[in-house]
Image (cartoon, rainbow, N blue to C red; front, top):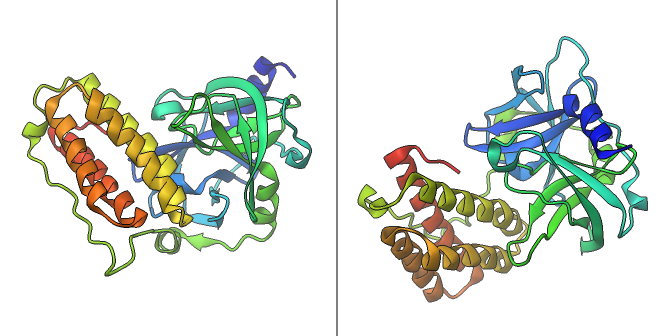
Length: 315
């Protein structure tokens, strides 16, 4: 199939996923009954998930059929009156470097149904439980959970994350992990799911110190400046938080550090640069990567809070 044919055929089965009205990702139906596949990090820890279909209809998710922490996947259930279009799952075990792929997602949360194409760059063994597809098809924040297609219009991966340390380094979880989740599903209510996927620092070990900034920290910032910072911070959290939840605290910290150093140097307004400088200094004083990661996450959360209070800017 051509890229255009894949897009035209698959769009009705691809959805927008909103969690707590703050996080936005992508998902897609894998069963006509309304089973939606997406990334776990898009919906983790929330009991308010809304699915918006291609035709404009919106549905509140009432049940989560399954989630896989090791592979960052979740299956959500919609209560539909009629069957919906769904996507065929291909055999991701035969995918090889050099194969062409097509990705469709919602970059930045508002560029709905954006299409990109590229190649499978490599097959990476991330752990004993996880193999990932490294791809050159660009993906961005908001595209997480979107389908990755082979030339036959079959889903062979779920767009999962990008690396901020290099150019065009994007990753997808192979679709082979979805079928067992569907076959062995154990439905949870939204409240049960939220409780099971809320990840906090270990009690008594990490003291969070989210800065409570005065709104004057944003003096001199233009709306587009704040949007750039919010997007950058949200992208760092989207990549880093799943690594932290897998106990890779060092990698999480390094992702956060790259973003903090970039804005400490290049942010358009002095107050924001100073906030990142302070967060980096606090992280440097910590002894473990766990503490360092939370020091920068506290800085991120404090800045996002003050942006929302001042102008409603959200990632």
